[in-house]
Amino acid sequence: MRVLMLGWEFPPAISGGLGTACEGLAKAMGRCGVDVLFVLPQAGGPTESLGASPGALAQAEYRGPRRRSPLRLRVGHTPTMVLNPYGTLPYPAPTEALAPALVAAKAARGNQGQRHLRIVGTGTEGGYGGDIQSKIHEYARHCMDLTRQEIFDVIHAHDWLTFPAAAAIAERSGKPLVVHIHATELDRSGSQLHLPIYQIERTAMVAAARVIAVSEYTRRILVEKYAVPPEKVTVIHNGIEMNGDTGFTRSHSGRKTVLFLGRITRQKGPEYFLAAASRVLEKAPETRFVMAGRGDLAAALAARTAAMGLTDYISFPGFLHGPEVNRAFRAADVYVMPSVSEPFGLSALEAARNGTPVIVSKTSGAAEVLPQGSLQVDYWDVDRLAECILTVLQRPEVAERLRRHAVAEAARLSWGQTAGLCLEVYRQVTGRR
Image (tube, rainbow, N blue to C red; front, top):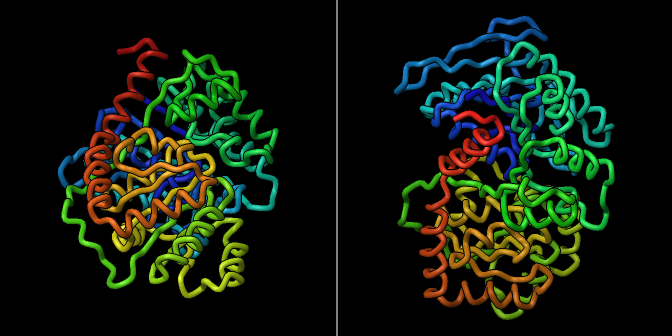
């Protein structure tokens, strides 16, 4: 099976859970023997070592440590930076960014399934504050050019930014389109709906042979708000790679720590986290709060924290990368995800993997997969949220029970399982076994 997969970000250059999910799924597909060509806007960085002229496509081979089959990798060579239209950076600054070729080469050294995964940078430029619609259609044009000579059985598109490209390729090739909904415009914007984005999403869902939703919560939105026929939507939860560690020694000393980690935007509910923190501090003034991430509300919430006189209790470390994320979870006594609308919430599984008790919003996919391994609250009920935080901090038996259930529930959600379910969708829409 050959799959053309379109995405807007890929680790280590990510803005949140989308890039992590794309990587986990693509690598698991490779381990299943699926030939994946992943096309994304190229991050800026040096590519001269591949020996190709700018603008060209180079063929490079990398060999993993165990399986000697080469990793075929094609990379576009226009150094660019791509920004998310909601104010977050999927890719770091140009001086920090890595070319996708180097990213995948590094990953190949430690991942058996990489031999089936090819990553292609389109050279698309992005820009926050610019015309994101033109960027999307530029990406679509590059995708059309790069895939013209490719052989594939199915097109798998992640998130609305890639949907115009995927629909155009599907129309030209006659191959079935699968759109993967990690979040909708209704999740991101709520009442401030951007109609053109909603229309892009709706058009792609109509054109698709199948729609994958990351949760039952998302499936209901697609059926009720996008009028997608229920039989067209398949729910496939995200996965997580467990590290096998059950010791879970906390890495901080002294003060109890409560963590928020995610985009600091309206969708993620950081205002409710701050309000709950204020209530907790009234009863447990020794508690420390960490709001990690970046987004359009970060500056305003930092200013509000100062106005409330809480700067000694609440810190804003900014966006965390790679190992910093695991260290943040290990340093926390409880992780809080008070999202207004959270299609899945991969960070809740990352917290579980690190042995951190979890409190999640009822309006999240994570509530479905951690039914016993999390406390669940209405995002707007800050008094109840504060009570749950205090319960976890002050009652070790509750924290241990949540930790034990969460580890067991997360362990049942592997990327291999997710890939297998996606592969069954491919078989259904292509008629191939």
